[in-house]
Amino acid sequence: MLILLGVAVIVVGFALRFNPLLVVVAAALTSGWFAGLSPLQVVAAFGKAFNDNRYVSIAYLVLPLVGVLERAGLRERAAAIIASLRGVSAGRFLIGYMALRQVTSAVGLVSIAGQAQTVRPLIAPMAEAASEVHDGPPSPETRYAVRAMAAATDNVAVFFSEDVFVAMGSVLLMVGFLTSGGIVLDPIHLSVWAIPTALAAFAIHSARLLLFDRRLARGVER
Image (cartoon, rainbow, N blue to C red):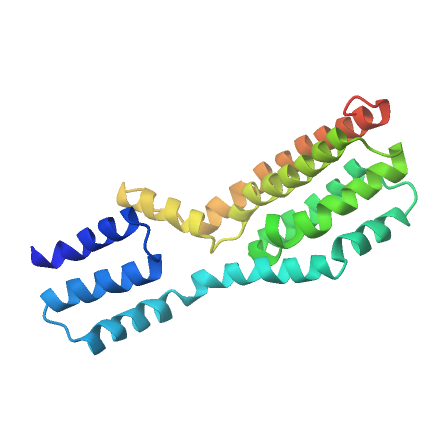
């Protein structure tokens, strides 16, 4: 039971608002000492855990990268490009993005885009620029509405298309759950039946985006 003293170290350290990294290291050394491990063995365990889960932290590299690109004028350039195109409304532009997002998600490229990678620095500014060119200068409320619709479009596209990819974790989870219940099913069957759902989601959300365009044209979102 003395091994669990590491948990107590974490509770006390966080309660006293010590440095989280130092608290975790102290807790690991405490539990390791009572478990009969040397400090080098504890450090080795830290290294193994980091190496086994190194891909988890890769996503955090996206945030400073996006920040640097935005500081260099990424949002302004994206808005300028879409503003140079005539006849492109916010809704039609988002429909095109949704189609691209669904196709890439269906082949397993879910992480190729997303809220942090593309929506905030690229898609939302481009949709705002399209709204401004097509319907006139938007109010702050309209800008927020366009940004929200851009984020929703990405969510809808990914959520209803990722299961088309046969090796997606959600598909394998469903196959495993059904197998545990005595229902043997090939993953490809689930992927095939996910296609009609993805097409229906595209049609429904495209209709929503076209209605959104009409509201923008009438100034309802202003």
